[in-house]
Every structure is written in C-alpha cells, then in structure tokens.
Image (cartoon, rainbow, N blue to C red; front, top):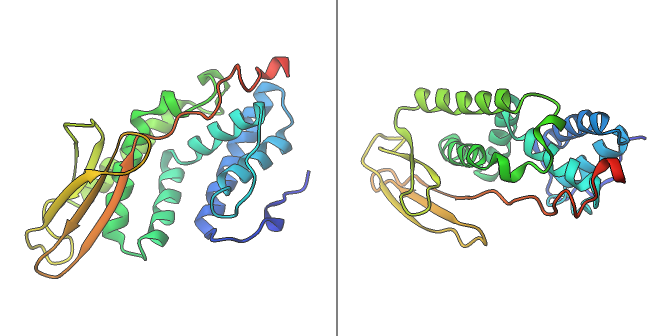
Length: 226
C-alpha cells in the first residue's frame, strides 16, 4: 500500500512531525506483524494519527486505533523519540533551546510515569523491550540535565508531576523567578513559567498526565477476533 503522507494537507506539520509519523509507522508495522494485522495498513494508520493535529487527518478506528496509539506513544520514547520531541519543541519555542529542553525534560519524565496508561496493547505485542525504551529515555534526560546544571527536575508536591525548572537564568546566570499554576487541561497538569528580571528571558510550558488510550482492547475488538 503506497504511503499517503504526501497527499495529506500540509497544515502546520514540521519536518519533526513527519519524523514522528515515520517512527510511529515503523513501530506500527512491527506490532501489526506480531498480531497478524496488515502491516502497511497499520503503518498508514499510525502516520495519520501522528499527523492528525497538524495535518487535520482523520484518526483510525477499531483495532488499528489501538495499534496506532501504541505506536505513536513508542515513537516518542528512546533516544530517537527524545530527539524527535526536542526538534518538535524547538519549532514551538521559536528555537529557544533553553525553553525547549525544559519542557522536554518534564514531559518525557511524565510519559515514563504513565507508560502503563498510554500504551494500548499488552507488552508482549510491542516491537521491542519496553524496559529498554524507558531506560534509554530516562538516560537521555539524565544526561541532558547533567549537561545543563542550572536545569533541575523535581516533583510537584500537589500533583506528583515532574517539573523541570532553572535555578538561575540559563542566559545570564542571574536569579530567576518561577511561578506554577493549573495547566487548564482536562487531566491533572501544571503550567510552569520562569522569568529573569535581569535580562528579560522568559519561558513557559505545561506538563500534564498523558492521556490514556481512547478505547480499550475490548472496545476496539481483540485483534484475533477481528
């Protein structure tokens, strides 16, 4: 089945968004092969789901939705997934590397906290060891924090969510102001804002508990009964 990505409306998709879609497609094809589902169809379903926001594509339904949601979640993990997420954040943060790294650290750690919720299929259906992907993701964030000593990760006592904040301004090194508040999303979340009174650098990001699967295995029909 030929890829339909080129035919999709461009929307506001960035090269990093398309990279996420292709990584999700790779995972989806491997999952589908294990489950006895059409690999090309599963890969295309994952592409469409990964690009559904920026290209306004219609997400898949049924068993393929389960495969696609799991594939997109996996595509954001590991060394490759973390690099893709950083590239996506750099576009949103207008190439401010300090702001992008801050949001990346908090969101990747939040994803690690919620793996059992965001993955829609049993671990034995996954294309590679979930433990290996989680370890690679955690190591990537730990190395990032080690390279940027002013950036620290901690847990918000009220929500339990991971928060990444600079202890001093990443640009000029001056003391920095930090403010947190509700994120305004339907799930537990925080909005983190930092501002340097000295040089004027500002950043803000939200971190929320990742959404669970949109449907259960029973609602999507088990692959061996479809």
